[in-house]
Length: 113
Image 1 (cartoon, rainbow, N blue to C red):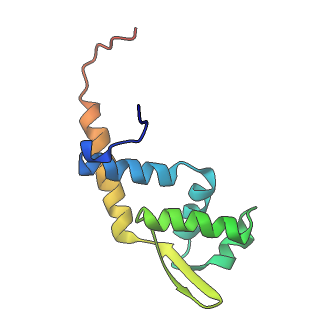
Image 2 (image 1 turned 90 degrees about the vertical axis):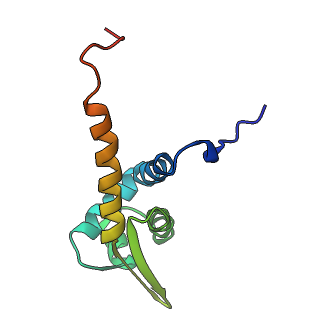
Image 3 (image 1 turned 45 degrees about the vertical axis):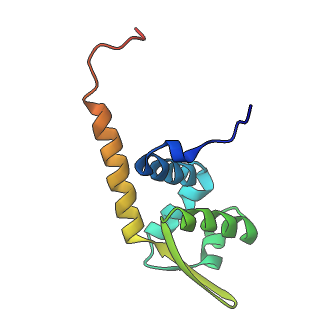
């Protein structure tokens, strides 16, 4: 029996939330987002100076964040600039807001008391 996840069996919204949650699922990525949130743009080297991570590690984490749409960046020779992607960030807030709102109205009684 295969353990491969069949993503086509889940809604687009479920897949998007999962991708963003996965990107947010590492403390280094949270730290990178916090650094970027306090700057209008950032050169990757600046991030490395603020975090206890190697350049290659920061680059891998930035790629995950960029793939999830939370960060945007331009890669140029000897200089990579990244910042929070406002459209991606807004989409993430909307998706998670809807997700949490859908579950706020859960019944008062729970089965696990």
